[in-house]
Length: 284
Image (cartoon, rainbow, N blue to C red; front, side, top):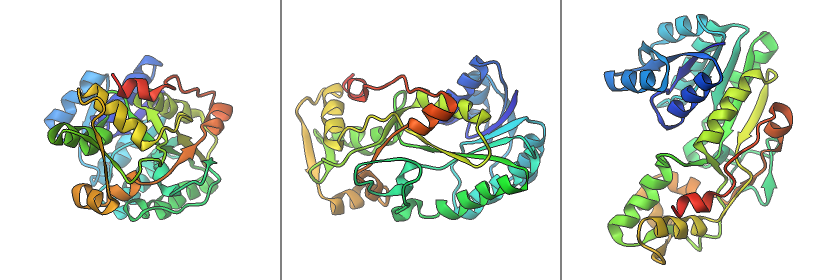
């Protein structure tokens, strides 16, 4: 299958290109710079130069493909929807996999699945209208699928590293918000890449949580990360107000208490997370 992919030079994108190639697919990937082009080529894709706002480029590239995976982070809801629309127009009846996120469900009050109500923090409240519009194309002959990743780890471990580990190294203790008892729905980047590839065969209109089913507390992650950073036993609680001051709006998302199950993707796609001991990864 020929797949067009956006966000290919990023953390998830490089892993997904590698998995697509490993499974025998050919990949074209959007690249907005020479550095991005080098990254997607190194991962195994053919680069298509352009920006996410270059709608004609997106539509034409999608038109050459059997399927599209949209991983790039848009600046606004309008930008994301415009890009999604162009690529869905281009790919026609081919599968279009759109990236959402698990934060849209807010606090889950126990283990939840894709049928749970949305209660998003402000940072991701815009996703509802975009995902609804994307999924609506299923009624017009399209094949939209939405993947909602949990909080990623493994490899570069970007968000957790940037907002917790690196500040912890700088300040001598890895922070967690409040009492740290809130749970994080984690997924390893390699498992998520396999889910994106599996989603190419999903039924139109499907939505899948990309989570491992292992939901440690934020404090447990902080303790394991501190150990790996040479700061064993050195963690500290910060208030939500301090987290907002340090991190910005993403603090509200990190403070969510979330537990999810991957059962739907397991049952419908045969996807099985292989990485189910995240704390050992964080602990190094």
